[in-house]
Length: 348
Image (cartoon, rainbow, N blue to C red; front, side, top):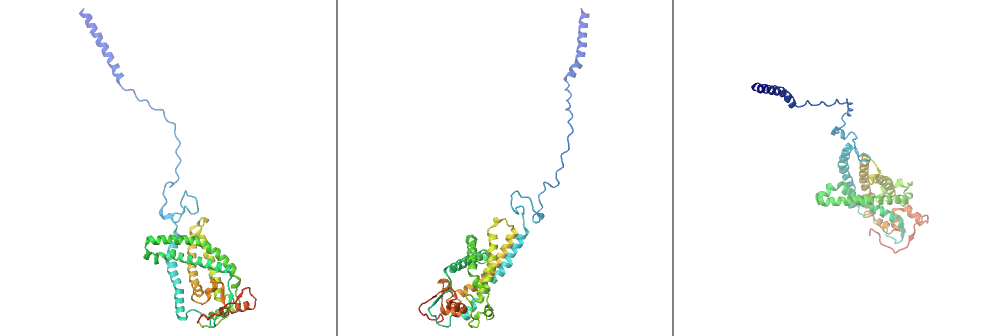
């Protein structure tokens, strides 16, 4: 019996010894599975060199850049010519332009103090001669008044920050400049329309005649007081017509349209050049027009009546435009002679 018990215990020990390695192996983690080998991939294409490099500021003003907004020159971020335009406009144009505007004012003030108004030598007859028709006067006043508006608003725009801003301050000057700009932009086309009509009406009477040379040689007798005969317009008026009205005002009109309508797709350099030409010639035009305004108002007695009523006295016509007066009296011209009462001479 004892022997059987011993044999059973031995068999149990042998079975336990055989089971322990199997249990230990079962407790070990399973070996990780290796993923299948990936298929070889093709190499990505190389990116364009400097594709993400921002533009250097040193190149912005010399090279056109990329812009998503369509239109002419929208890809020009910095325009170097703009600096040159600003220097010219705020420098020589403004400085020397102001001097040019002051010169005729000084000359005319001195001339008026020395000579006074030009008067007729003989008494007025009271007989009136038609000098300008209603159409001619409307064209003249439309062009003249629009010219004055453009001149005054142009002075505000060009010289205002030097002569007006220090007096009225920034707020008032800002409102004044906006008003001046809008008036300038809208009155400009009216001036151009009147200019074309004016040239068409008066170009024939301003053709050069042989006797105009003598008037120029004696300066119309303005300094000597000598009577120098002339046609309906004297040589001085003809020079002013061709130089101021036909040439200067026409160029000013064209450059003004370039500035007034940027939607015509002109470039910035074209507009900057147009602005410099427009400003410079406008200053010359204002200086030249000053002489005409002076002689047509306080500088010569009876001259303003020609544009106010369309008529001048017979004496005035004979002393200032004798050749034209002779043709009217001879019936060679369409102007009418109107009888009236005798008046004292304008110098009395």
